[in-house]
Image (cartoon, rainbow over all chains, first blue to last red; front, side):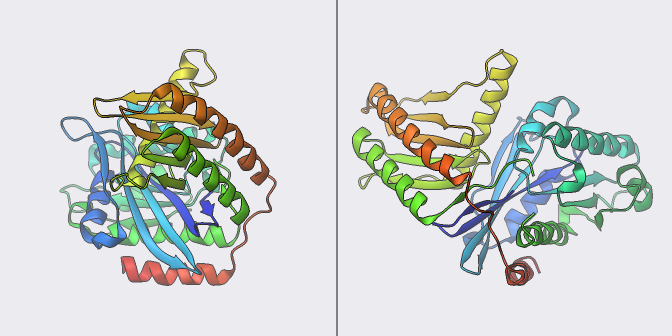
Length: 196
Length: 161
């Protein structure tokens, strides 16, 4: 749950972008960083390999402003998508308040999407929580690539019961990035006011 | 949720603050931060003579992530945890020690400050701060009204369109 510092009148929430490798998680954060006014965001930290693949995480602090006298801040994280970095993914999920699952529309990434969602469920379960206990929004990214799979086909392997709010996105040009972030942020803050 | 919320209230916050202030004075370190395990700064103190601190959000996040990775390594090696981390450079040192299971005390200091002195005083402070954080576990859950949700939504609309 969110960290609340009454004395400093701060509420801090952690949002994690999850999904298979190369699905566009870091691209989401880079777009937010480039568009949000400088006084509302902190430094973006990227722990990446030489070829700019996420090694541990990307991190971007974001100030929302004051709500009822509480300075409300979001810490946005990505996880490394590659299968072999699971230990890192598990660590980054620690204390998560909300998740954006970034799915890849490429035809050859359908299985990777499904496996990443299964991995998310398993990692959350290892922390002792059910996937339904955390606000999750589904972003289907790369809608502009040639041969992009139908959204419903992607959803069928990730969210067959259609429980998640879905956004189509083209994160490289910012399409759908803020809509997705706004949606997950609202879910997180709603839970806070419901004291869950 | 994965982690319990850490809600620091007035008196507890003041007491934690005073302990950090005392630690700062006793050791001569530049910066002293209490960070929760999720990477959020709970309290921060800096020496009057210290230059402007680096981005505290980033420092806290990296310290917490590093501690989590170190703990995972400890488990793999059959240890419950490694309670302290020391990173020494040419100009200065970063020293991190666990405050129970919920927080990390982080000190940043110049090479002129003896590490041994920092360790001795830090251990004393940790016992005091851990006791205060322990008291907070029994604090009542935090309540926010529906107005909070509405206010937050309005801010999100402003910021994200």
